[in-house]
Image 1 (cartoon, rainbow, N blue to C red):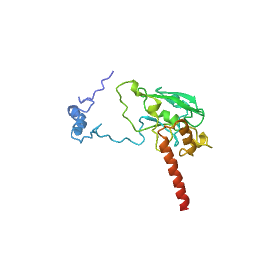
Image 2: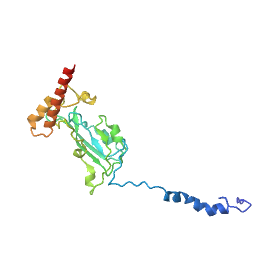
Image 3: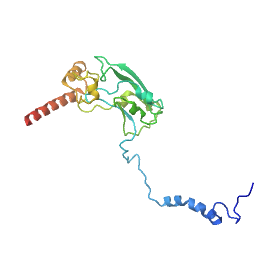
Length: 224
């Protein structure tokens, strides 16, 4: 095989001087970085807000009257590529209704030791029951503590919501809930809960919310 080296004796890399200064050029980026201004975040003393669409800890959402949006369909579990979600559905009854429609999620677990935060689960959810928050601090002292149960994932009760179980708003169906036509609990739901759970802590705020809405309607009628 013929010798492919240049006849003038120089190397293919560019010659003696190029080889001599090649390491200097390679370290040029390092030298420039040494004198650049550092961008250090003083975490956890100073927490920088995440981007609005950041995929953090999951949340199981509620309807405005307090009923849960999850219907126990298990589509999120089937969509999860890491097999991190476990769901058991159950039937709603007249005395134990947790969501609109026929079923609700009786057991809901997310194993954050497996979760890769890809967001496939929230894309698969047909009722927008499962979303992802901006919370990213999920470290813990034990492996068992990183398996979140339903009570850990449920959205907090907002002012005016009525804690389930309780009936749906009279005269509505699950479609009305999914279309956003239910905006607050009504007196019939409050009376139902008061009869069965008179010590429920959400009763007082729900009653106040109904009274406030009634007074607002009266003011609007007078203004017209």
